[in-house]
Image (cartoon, rainbow, N blue to C red):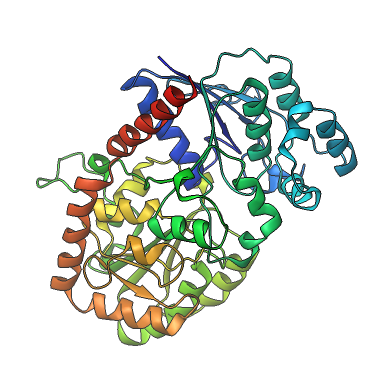
Length: 433
């Protein structure tokens, strides 16, 4: 049995691909592969709370604070009042930090991004003989990456990072930040395109990068052949009674410019000019920009928009979320900020065609014309054209959806991903000894 430490920025009830990835890896690797996994994280729920006291945090008395399913979680409060100078002085007093030789300007960005928890840092530094065989952290460029490196150097154990490197976003290409990635013993990239970028643009050795994609709980999303009597229907619950035959277009993710949510809203008028009977469903945390654009689009005649936030859902397996994936006609997420896109896998598991952006890692995930379509990022006209093509062609929708479903079943279940991850852990630990 290996002892593994996970250091994510946040953990459930926080909702995002990085948090879900660590949750499923911890659950499967601890049960099926008999690893002992500790999870140390911040008490932040939303991104704002990583660095701002006005963000949402989970309190010690609340559900999920110290236990998620069978996993034990140790959460530490974010030190909002610690100044950049205080943090730098504390770090410079740690011998193993000094050995890392990190660029101070780059380090300041990690500090700014958060989450910095003095209690977490003290807890680890005061227990140097923790008995961990390996440390795994995610994602880039957040301060928990620095903590992972400090601890790894302290106990002389391998440190792994899954950075979810958004190489199509210019702010991730700061060479001062990238220097930190070179300090890890292994980087797990989600795609070969990400690996290629890390090698060519970031000068990271190919031997230090392993490609392991994301996964999905296939059986939860795949449609059943016979609908059970107690079947929960999203359309019956949320569509007007006379509109059950309307098409359903789904987006699931952070509702911002990066994810393409604003571009989808701007494409709606063009779609409705050609096809009137359509519902648009958005799931995920909202932003001010999204809410502003939504208020304008909602005023359009015939615009049918259903908007869910995490507050309306019970988690990753919320019955509304599962049902809407199964009943959707198209899954649409034209994002430039995804290292992979777990929601594409969820849509394919349900046998649905997907539309993503022709940027970053997505062209490796979606096979154009085989299991989905690609559009130009932030191009509402292109989005509308592809959506209309699919809405008018049921046979094409089914063909693309089934191709994606087959791909997921054979390559992208969480069990497959966990098995590959466990193999990587064991090789690193064995090499260390």
